[in-house]
Length: 83
Image (cartoon, rainbow, N blue to C red; front, side):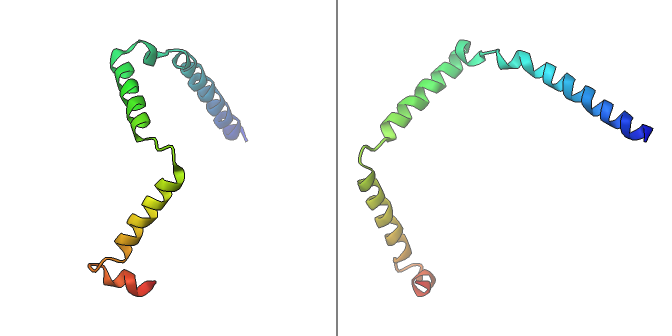
């Protein structure tokens, strides 16, 4: 029974130390000051804005058309037989 109590106390102390070591990292905000990360964030925003499609129906129709062409092309006969 004493060994179990010792194991629980070791786990408890370890988790307290782990939690205490994470607190300073929560407020680091390194992304706010690093110019490389700011540049990457701006590039990601511009890329996502360029990829945005305002018409979801057209996007779905295009996707379905491309999937249909892939499934029913002549080079993949085994897929045609399954359908």
